[in-house]
Image 1 (tube, rainbow, N blue to C red):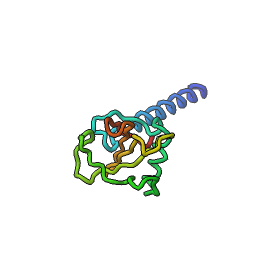
Image 2 (cartoon, rainbow, N blue to C red):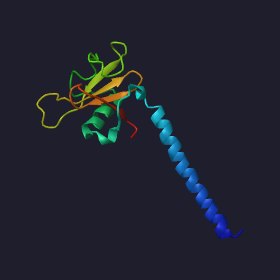
Image 3 (tube, rainbow, N blue to C red):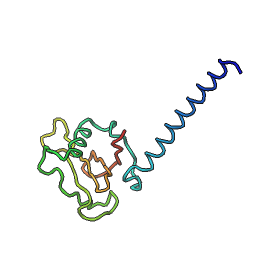
Image 4 (cartoon, helix red, strand yellow):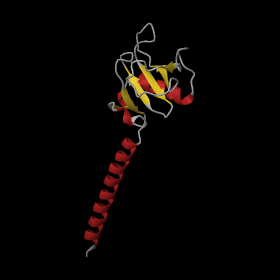
Length: 132
């Protein structure tokens, strides 16, 4: 076999390995996303308003938070998130530009690191993938 054929086969093999790795990584990450069992639509953090990313960074750092209500227990009264212990979820303000109050946007963080976003003050939620 000539050297050109070897190089071609090697390149094809490399491409197959890279594409296969991406597919396996994506399938694995989706299966291990905390909160996946909620049945909610999954959205990448990068697709949410930029203020949601800033709030997530504050949550990861442990604050300081702009509102004294950030970090309070979210009671899930309407049961739109999976039912857990009373103090399982905590809510954080996602600032709304131009709003004179906290606005309607929140991130809700669970004890197993699941992350949910609402843009309409708990009427509906999406599961957030902070890695995307």
